[in-house]
Image (tube, rainbow, N blue to C red; front, side, top):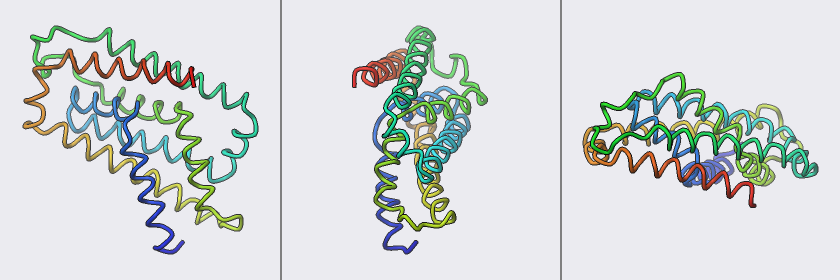
Length: 203
């Protein structure tokens, strides 16, 4: 793949990673509750999930999902169920606004990794995104190496973006302004996840 073909792909993948959604809410929550390490672990695991989707889409699963709507519906409902579970759990875990964020239970590093991976693989919109994107960049005669490069580009950009978000959120200057609103942030994150779950089912 030439640079002239790779750069537009990388730009679209970056814009896709930057778009707000459940992944951002989950990564941000772990970065705020557990610090940069937990946020980065969540980001890396999310990138692994992106890599799995990208490899599957690059090798033809995207065509299968679009031609078998019943299969896609199952994936879609499973993703909505996980978003709903996360949203409810976040809402139930909120504490008094008077308690500083550093005194709240820390985010589990292992849990951050698990949630980062699952939020990626359970989101059917990621599958549709890559199915549409790769149809523009993968030629019928593309080699396995070219497909792997394209999938790795998407995963690498995703990892780097969310790792950067995690490091920014974990800075003391940023946290000092957020610690006073720990309960509000939990409500916001939980509400976003629940709203996304409902929107997946409706659409």
